[in-house]
Length: 311
Ligand code: FAD
Image 1: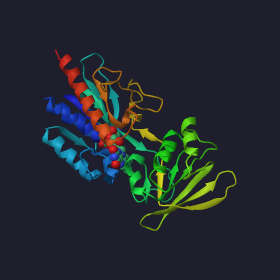
Image 2: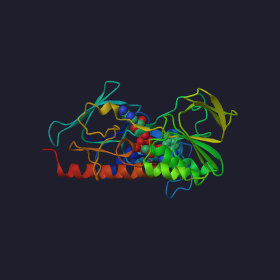
Image 3: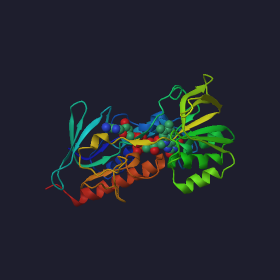
Image 4: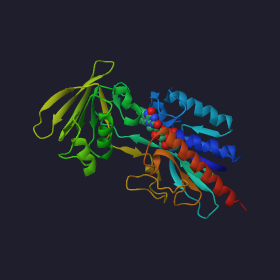
């Protein structure tokens, strides 16, 4: 069995593994797709100490570091079930889609999250070519340009307020008849001169010239009328879904959004099981944060292991 088994090979899982392996613990990382969201990311300009890198390159760097630290990397392995140890200090079990079962004295769950997609024509085609999901990451690429933010919840309205400082013009589009963001955010948004707010708006298509986004098609859900808006960017802010569906029966405590609840050491409600990164309640979903949280969870597992030596 492993001393530390990490489920998920994104920035959080890789960081956790590097920390526990360097403490001398037998560490494994099992991931459906090593690199996680990094594999879908083009430019990264907000990782402190690295002026510019690209997701797949950062993922390759993490992979070499993982392998250099003698971590067992089990790629293309999708966990389907967690069976926590029945007694403190016992072995936890993870079952995988291919039928394999791995055992470990401690676990770090770092299965990340995925952006909810609109699912309309053009969205996938123009991803990273004008269609964006992360305002902190990609906002500066749209300096002075016209953009839309889709989604009138807290994340959409926050994104619109944030982006309005950088871009030329923002159209905020909400599907419902009213915004759902906190009142104070709505008030701030409405005070901004370069923001238009559309409610009852259904985005039916993202259009482009074959290379980049050049507009979107908006349908008024009341009148049924369709119109085109010319713009250069579309930020989709309709939710981030944690990859925790497979934990439903595990007894791990999840928030109402399905995020794993952890304490300040990354510990879950089950002894010896830690969690980190976008799959948890950590409020900000960013690479540097996932790495930091992963390191914390790794150190949490270290602390647990030295206090719970096997008989
Ligand atoms: P993830 O990166 O989501 O990794 C999760 C890992 O778990 C993957 O290996 C996945 O395959 C695996 N996994 C999931 N389910 C299972 C399962 N059941 N069994 C086994 N393995 C599983 N952040 C920034 O700081 N700067 C940026 O510029 C930036 N740009 C971004 C651009 C895009 C397009 C996207 C999508 C995100 C961007 N982010 C950016 C956010 C950043 O990528 C995430 O915050 C970060 O990757 C989270 O790391 P994580 O390790 O928690 O999860």
